[in-house]
Amino acid sequence: MKWQLSPRLLVLPALAALVALVGLRLWHSHEPITEAPDLPPHAFQWLHGLAANTTTLPTRHPLRPPYPHPYRFLLNQPHKCRDQAPFLVLLVATAPEDTGARHCIRRTWGNESAVPGTPILRLFLLGLHPVFADALEPVLREESREYGDLIQQDFMDTYNNLTLKTLMGLQWVSRYCPNATYVMKADTDVFLNLHYLTRRLLLPPRASFVTGYVYRNTAPIRSKAYKWYVPRELYPNTTYPPYCGGPAYVLSTDVASRVHAVAQTLPLINMEDAFVGLCLHALGITVTDGPWGAFSMGRIPYEPCRFARAAAVHRYQPQEVLRLWPTYSRCDSCGMRVD
Image (cartoon, rainbow, N blue to C red; front, side, top):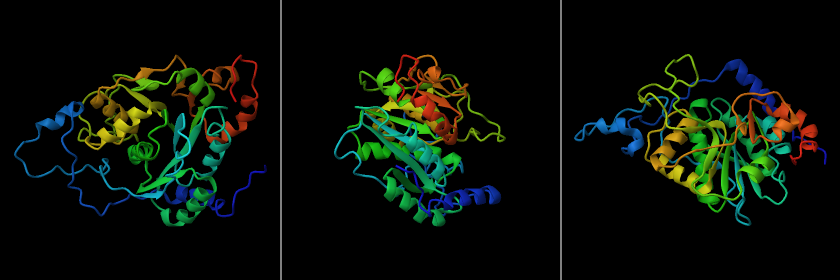
């Protein structure tokens, strides 16, 4: 069937170009910044030093989004799991204006029919564009009606709010798809092999399971020159607990629901993957290393046979994956199916 874009969807590339010209403006919340979550469990020992008799809550750091907070679903797909519990819910973090990336992903590794006999559900996670939210609203609603795979809440879609985006996805799974077997969070700039993932890494199904590329003994970046900057006011410890790299990782659904629940009691940090690790640490859940090379956090040269034995490779843009996909999906010389 010929692939066509509606006229409204064609507007998005122009909006994206305009964003590049004017830049992102800072979003100033009109809510008071005096709220703080309850004192957390053992993962956050530094907060236990607060004076027990104080009546003044600490102010919220601007890099810490308000949470818990009653963010509203602006786009939702509440009935997607009504007829069948998927084996894998694929949550793809995407920017509102990235319609082209979403189309590429639907046609490549995000194809819900990628693994015959294995039910897969794909959802794209979005917040509000910091500048063009109103202009994008009707375009995104049309895309949602056409594909039924967008979920969006009313927080600003910025890098420092990626933690909110992932928590939105986990909230959706907990509320609308609790009978799924696994949840995978992925970024758009990855090359995923769902056949290898579901047939080689995730069978037999396991509970209390988390896997990906595991970082251990990593330190917060304290320099403001980097987008990964985490000030001591947010996280004063010298290292993070073990966590899976954010571009692609997998949780069993019971863990996904527990991470969402414990996140209601912990102070957020702006590094999404490290925060999930903090939640796992608070829950006493260990992370499991994937097989060597299964989750690559850096770009590696494209080789069909090597990619056939990988679950995820980072730093491949959706348009590049679309170009490579026809030869990759037809590859049968590696002794493994990749379609």
